[in-house]
Image 1 (tube, rainbow, N blue to C red):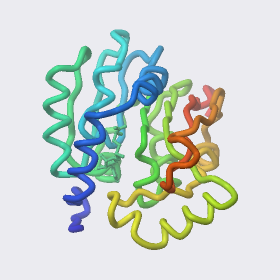
Image 2 (image 1 turned 120 degrees about the horizontal axis):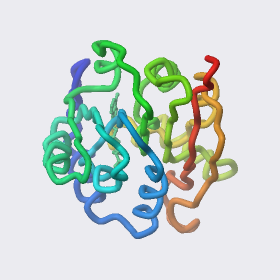
Image 3 (image 1 turned 30 degrees about the horizontal axis):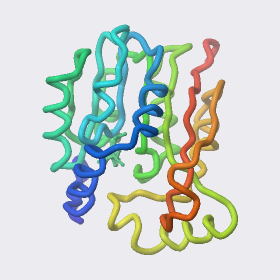
Length: 218
Ligand SMILES: C[S@@+](CC[C@H](N)C(=O)[O-])C[C@H]1O[C@@H](n2cnc3c(N)ncnc32)[C@H](O)[C@@H]1O
């Protein structure tokens, strides 16, 4: 892996994700649809990958600003943006870079899907995303989360060894919901879903999908 502060270059992960994101199961497509349903106004999408979410935005969304740092994925996101049902602008670079350069114009919503596992310091980034939302604005999340028991131990070993290196800095044992709450959001709905059949030998086991809001009085 080579990396500058603004972009990332993980050739193995980028090729794998390009393949996986074009062969998604109906189940993950259903979760993507649910994650974006009911959104409206101006949306920031963090780490858009190949732009898989773009097709699922409802017509009530007036603008999506999508950031994507991986240099082999960002062109796919741009191509997906051209076909999207709503206006999408793709910005090359990390969310950290974007947050450092934005003029602070508030967003109505932030979308994080399968990305908070890969951000170096999700607690800090979530606090900054919280600031960028208008009061009453929402965070939609679809993320894989840490498990207990044997799977949890496997995740810790994977996270300390090869998994982040192979998978674009993905960490499998994060408590993402705790980070969301720690940033000041109120989680008003969420549930966990199995990511793959329980027997499947991968450290990624469960998704959490939900909505968190920035309190109006914050
Ligand atoms: C597993 S992919 C998910 C892509 C997309 N969100 C989706 O749901 O299909 C993880 C994505 O997070 C991106 N990513 C990793 N670190 C990031 C960062 N610091 N800022 C923004 N995106 C990041 C990767 O480049 C990759 O596109």
